[in-house]
Image (cartoon, rainbow, N blue to C red):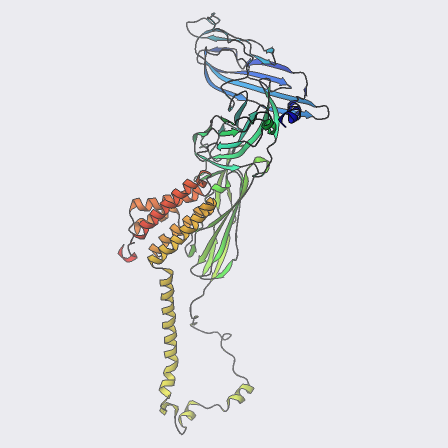
Length: 621
């Protein structure tokens, strides 16, 4: 059977590797400098440009630059493809630009050899360039000994180059759309796989690119086909697959690294089983890339946190008139581009309003690979006394990286009216004529019988005051009213005791929330997991203090815990843990199972310490 299928397998192999017709290749290599005469210590720019038709621009043989200090170098590879399926003709236009910032360190005349590239055995040579460096004690134009030029090579580029280490069988390439950014500015990262030949299965990423210091959002759909394009590297055709594309937002300043990924590649064809067995899998590791994150400019920067990107704010109330003690929902929608999910907005703080901890919802979209979305905050607001409250505008400072300008966006103010709702009603001090009850009409008078005065009643056979039941009848109404008042007060005290649950009950409820969080961790739902941890920790704090802490900031909560007798170290741990939960809900690394298990263990330990905390009474402080 093996001999019978070998011709078929060979035919498939030949058809799979049959090259398409390629038009004639050509290349143009140029070298230029912004200045050719400089003095010692001056800096200048040197550019080598390679334009290639019908092939990818290979790495050129560059001139020797050891006579200068190389301050920086940059490689850009803009590329365009055009395919003609009717004639099976492929047209490729590609460009590689090598830009160097050099500093003259010694006087003399330096002749830079012409750069050159080799494509399929043919060499293309650019132009030479002379740089004259003048300086004290060395006449300008003095001839200096020249270093030996590099030997031309027709081999493909080796070593680290433009996010890749070349391999003639397969290699990985990581590309970022910018190497410099601001905190919160989007960086688009793409991981490519270059394979020479065919694949018999899907590649497996055994180690993802690490993104410590970034918040990331995947830009590719979870269900997709792995399609390949063709690129020529050093005259060798490769099939190129996009394995990952994600948006990375720097969370801090400094040099941040996108780590090297590792991929297992099933090389070969499905027909290899009929020709001696399949080829062994190969493993390839990419190279790390460094992104320089510069701080936001100081000039014109507003105080507080700054959102990088566009933003709009819209605030609303579900009701604008409520009775005192009734809750309304205050909603704030923040919509824009950038890392909207990092927004942290404090609720309003007005005397007479109690504001509970907010619930947040996020909607993320990425049209054209540009991440945007909406973060919705919802606070429960309870007016504690009657009056008219004006909720001030919410304000957020923004920075536009394109224009380099700051701006403060804000929502419109909102008015809330709370009507009085005293228990048992109110007794007016005086009544107007309109408020007095109307006199009974004649029909009602006839039904009531004859009207008798107080003296006529007293002259009856048996006066009411002399009857035995009269004192009890007179005292019945006040006694009933007193019993009603005492009952209401007792119910209120019972409700207050119920609101301030016993420590055992609070701890039991908190452990139930920890169990819910553990189920979310098992399902891989990081946001629900950290939200459950936050509720568990806050419930224990509120149960211990006997008061709500939902409307206070983290710093205010820390001060409040210390005021009630908690040690500075424990109060700081509580606040840091709450802040960590808030940040972890939107961090990709926090979704790892080990990290969630560690957070769960810390929460159990912290709740155990809070269970032993006995706060100082209000009147003892």
